Amino acid sequence: MNITFRWYGKDNDSVSLEHIKQIPGVKGIVWGLHDKPVGEVWEVGEIQSEVKHIQSYGFHTDVVESVNIHESIKLGNAEAASYIENYKQTIRNLSQVGVKVICYNFMPVFDWTRTEMYHPLDDGSTALFFEKAKVENMDPQKLISMVAESSEYTLPGWEPEKLDRIAELFEEYKEVDTEQLWRNLETFLTEILPVAEECNIKMAIHPDDPPWSIFGLPRIMNKAESYERLLKISNSPSNCLTFCSGSMGASPTNDMVEIAEKYADRSPFAHIRNVKIFDNGDFVETSHYTQEGSIDIKNVVRAFHQQNYTGYVRPDHGRHIFGEVCRPGYGLYDRALGVMYLLGLWDAYENEKVGAQ
Ligand code: DNO
Ligand code: MN
Image (cartoon, rainbow, N blue to C red; front, side, top):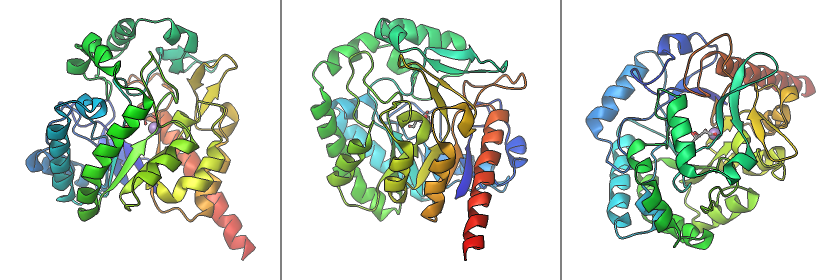
């Protein structure tokens, strides 16, 4: 298990690399060029300067999250081909600095979606919250304003230039049902996987969050069967998954321990975090600690350990604790606690194994 930590860049994150350096066991930074408009080629010079800065702190830069996919590709419209060419060029440019994994997602319009960024928890902290009924009855425009008001940062995947043309996008998606979205994903992968393979880069798709359709938009990456179907599209070693216990695990029908047992070997990158699910379909993010949420994090980690997992792992979102002011879900303190929990579990399983020999 190669522990990493997501960081949004010098001028784009309340957390500093100096502080991340003080968390035991963190070897690499999961990074991205978050100011780049979606669809534009990431140029070698800008990649190199970001990577050089991160590496000067002694971290590796093997994992990029995310190179987001332009809506044209997801829509499969007339501009898709040229955006796919740009994407290929970004892959080639990232390979020049030795990137090993690119995380991406194929969610139409919205990346991870919540209805409240600072929902109070019983322990006095706050965390991201999803209220199912609220989304079912909400105008997407209202959600966009709520998200914009709640954070001084642009959330990843919530680029203002995209959200400005939301009505238009919803119109265009009327033509795209889940089968069409699968076909568009297939076209994208068929085009880019040979390039990724040549560049020795694994393309790791992140599951939908939440793992069901919202606002009538299609979503396809939300259960074990989605993985089966994705892996059948191509047997390229670059056709891979990002395991995310909190995203897929927000649906009680997804058994994340089973999914870890089955797909860890196809997941070069894993996000591990907990959520508490309520009977009405709402969920709230909790600490990583197994006992505080609905996901059996300790057995998820066991499943990875049993397979001698050597991939990249990061704590995913955390609560906002100790009075920290930070990006929603991406503070320093709770994610640092998450790292220690993951390392503690790993060491305990390691000991068991040695003891059993
Ligand atoms: C949710 C987070 C997401 C994720 C992107 C991947 O669990 O990990 O923000 O980073 O959707 O593209
Ligand atoms: Mn995730």
